Image (cartoon, rainbow, N blue to C red; front, side):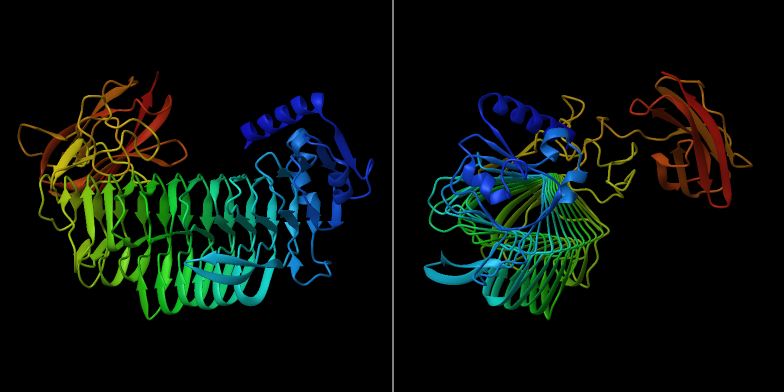
Length: 595
């Protein structure tokens, strides 16, 4: 955010050398009067206050902004409010309009946009014409826009035949324009459709970017088809969109058919979905629910889903599918590419983590854990005769279902290779070993057998598949260079797991945790311990705040003496504690990392 503020301020300063600043209300009485008076490249700078208004950019390449753009003080955003609730035209109830051929040189920045009720229009879609009320807060039609660093909240599109875009509607049509939506908080907007409702936060038809937004707590209602927080679709022209680094959280979808709690990508879209957190969205489908986190349907080109956290999404309904990701009816496209994602804690009746129906997908270096399916496919469900899910370098662990806790195939194909599947799964290089996660982001503990057990490339049916060249955090894969990649979304800095070495000698009479040596150390030290009885053993490292920073051992060991060589290269200098727990024996000692 700070970098974005600096860039915007610098651009405004440079532009001001060549263009004018119209101050509201010092130079013009209201925002629309300022826009009407502005020339290309001007900035309309608005003082804090409550402005009951609707504004139209009228095709002008101007910046309309609060004082946030001058000093980066986010208080200006909450205190500079454009409220459309006093509008008297029931058919045109949006707050901000881009409808005269604007592009990303027309900028809306630093406001709270509220009180909108949407604008009645028509969309051509799938060969039909659909009347709709759309764009509660911002309405973009046959145009583009740059919408940055705003709060777009409490816009409510009332009951209408179809409703789209509770916070923002973008429809570029055939204008050739692009739209960029970045740095906004899009919250507590509502859409309510008799037939179809889509995009309670954003509805997007066109080319553009949605980045660094908080899209949360929006609600969709529909008597028939209800779609979630962010909806994309196109028709005959292929559209390119980037969805990056957004938080899409706590949105609710209610309808007879409820789909896509987080993101819906539908028809004619080539999307890159990267670095988003899509969490705790809820689908309440009376008859049908599908795709708690992401739903791809009728795709015509390859889409990429990379390095996202998809967690805690829930799908309800008489039939409910795909708590995390749903890929439907996209068998005629190149494979959808799903890489480096953490898919955890999602739930549905079938396909707790991912469902692939009548589609093709590559699933490489994902971590799919702790998802729940009431019936089948806790981690992954593949069905439909045309389905093919290629699973490589992926962890499927801790998922649950009545049938197929980790993987269920009821139609199609799902070759699995070099993956860690709980309970085992046929395929070259697969293992069945606790992955030993070190933290809540599922980094691998140094002793994890997933380290170095992946594969960099694999040929299946004359097609080559490749591990991505980066991991969930954007770090290079493999790491270190020249090693084999790890299994899972996170790449460890180790090329091979660090194993515990038994020390030969007599069996110890008592359990003991010895002082590490050397101490202080940089960056490696040796920890020795003795076990009088065998059993489950953990050896963990904590910082001075009591926070766990590393899990060195978490496995069943026989009685004996052991040593562990620990490399702390990734930690800062300071005092740490190491703690051994083995049955009733528990002991903690200090160690000092001195770089």
